[in-house]
Length: 412
Image 1 (spheres, rainbow, N blue to C red):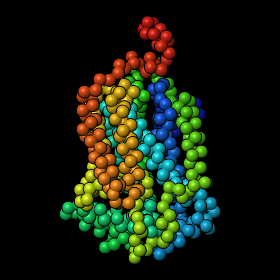
Image 2 (tube, rainbow, N blue to C red):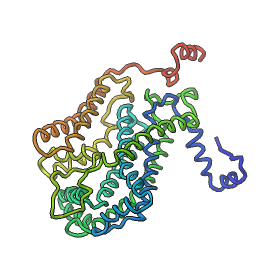
Image 3 (cartoon, rainbow, N blue to C red):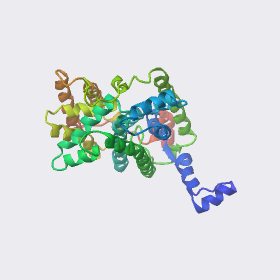
């Protein structure tokens, strides 16, 4: 259905650049399954946090100095001298954690309801690409304050690339801009940290495009069959997303004003010193599961391969999961395995923040083993042999009271 604006000016623009019609279709009349729960709000929250990170990051960059002798002091200048600089800095640093929280919840919701299955494979892939770009951006941003954990975290993580055969040393030298983590490294990371969010915006546009092409998944995993199964995105889901945003902002504000350093590391308030190694080098909390997987293997190359493999296997999920049923609501065995897998990921997060000693090493290896066992072995087997529960006839039949759905079926 074509869109014709009533405003003459908008109508003139629409005939030459149909952007208002595109936005009207995407944000207003887009047919959305009528049974979406609040778990579907986290996609919108992730988009909101991306905007917050962009705005606060651009303003902070106006006052930041990317030089090893001045970076730490420039951050203190932002905190103490810039008007509301403390608020901008805390919004940006805590906003990264909030961004990862909503993205992790968004990913696990997709795993539970099978949102990676056909015809949404490319949508899932684009989401994982966004996740990888987020990790790269967050890592480079963590280096910028040039505190102790910034410097030593950069040293440890960049050294991992040296384990790659043949090209490893070349990659490390390029990342460093020399032969150690120093001023060229900080300049590279600042440039990339500023650039990558705009790349994320581009991939997010592709992600939304793919979503609107294949349509939204829903808690039943059933595709929309007729108009009774869907409702317009506005006003139903815009209001729902705004309510979810209000609750999210309460949580965000609680961290921002009452515990702004709770998710950070105190060592990063100490200026970087290449001659003093911290007692326990840890990355930010959102990297801890992969850090635990990295440390589960005593061999450096093996650990790096396993760490990157932990994300690579997620790209293969649409083909590893053999079940024809999407939603875990109708898959009793898979539902139990999902919760075990979620607990396993929480255990990996905890282990990643602990010292590399027993019993944490053993627990980390067991949790790492189960991570790959679940995805590569249990998921395909359960998909082939599990007996799912019967699916409802339609989304409407699942949502409406039984008598109403029976009456609709008899009328049809």
